[in-house]
Each structure stands twice: as structure tokens, then as C-alpha cells.
Image 1 (cartoon, one colour):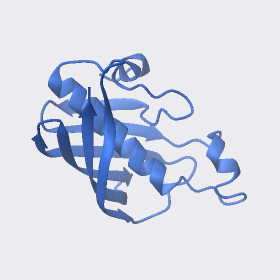
Image 2 (tube, helix red, strand yellow):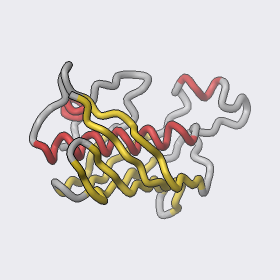
Image 3 (tube, rainbow, N blue to C red):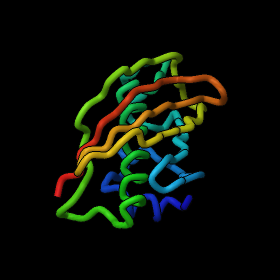
Image 4 (cartoon, one colour):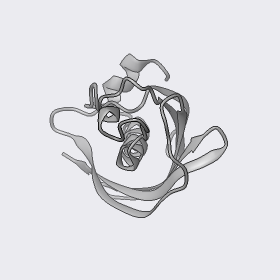
Length: 144
């Protein structure tokens, strides 16, 4: 799975809020590796920050959650629909290690830690090349 149309079938997000550009690896029930290309054309760079654009940390966490949602729906063997989607339920241990700037490519790595009913907990990390940019434990809930 790598094509943007396929990614869009697993996420309800669209421009400018679709933050996963490519999926390069999936182990159902275990982990996903995805890519977010950071370009200067993204609308939030006008104000974050003029003259020194930095990709917002909350959007790094959102990109990680979107990768997690793709993994969850693929693991369940279904697509999201009007009656079901994945929502954030919590963010723990979030740390930001380096700024992400236009031209960077974020490598999103998400691993399922556990699932209980409709609650999924993940370990999530975002890298620029080999440098850790951000990490967190995220929890998402499947709403139907």
C-alpha cells in the first residue's frame, strides 16, 4: 500500500489535513511505517513562523495518529465509513526532539502496544533521516 488514493480510502482527511503521503511498510496487528513530505507550500507555514518556518508539533502527532488509524483499519480488515472512524483518546509522554522544517521527510513509525475493545494504544515516533523528531504514546478510540 503506497498510493495516495489507497491511503485516502483508509482516512477521512483531505487537503490540507491529510498528513500521510505514502505507506512503505505494514505488519498487520503490529506496526506501520509511513512518510510525510514536508513542503514549504503548506498553509500553516505562513504563520508558523514567518521567516523561520517550523512544522507544528501537534501536526507531527496528528500525522502519527493518521498512520495509526490506517494500521488499525487494515488490521481489522475494513474501511472507515460514515458510521465509523478513529478519534484521539489520549496522548502521553509526548516529546519533541528537533524542529521539522520544509524539505524534511518525516518517517512515521507506529507500533500497536495493546487493544481493548475499541481502544487502541500505540508507541509512535517520527524521524527525519535518523534523527528522532518526536515521540509519544497515543491512544485512539474506534467510534461506530
